[in-house]
Image (cartoon, rainbow, N blue to C red; front, side, top):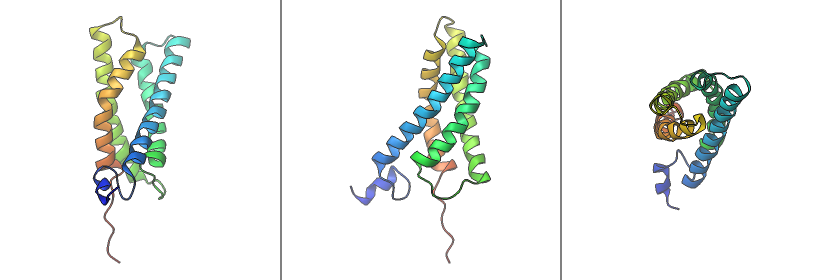
Length: 145
């Protein structure tokens, strides 16, 4: 592959590896989200709209850790600034995700909560990737030595 691949992935990372890392990290976060939602609604009878707040919070932590490792393959230790950027992107994406989730359930109350979760997550995924790529984990120019 040509050096052109850097348009699609940061640094020297191969675009396919980057995409697979994003997919894996997203699936990890989605799995945590779905598992927590299922446990809270199924075992504890928590209303899906409330249960989703806890599920999103835990999924965000899983997503941050897995995106650092798999999507962006960072070798530097995490920093507070990076986490705050990620949290800003993550909560904005989560607000989009949650808002759409609620709208689906209010518009069609018979919709299964997991179906609403998948649909809302797919929509928020595009925003999430762009925010991570160009804000939370963006390449930092190095100061000349």
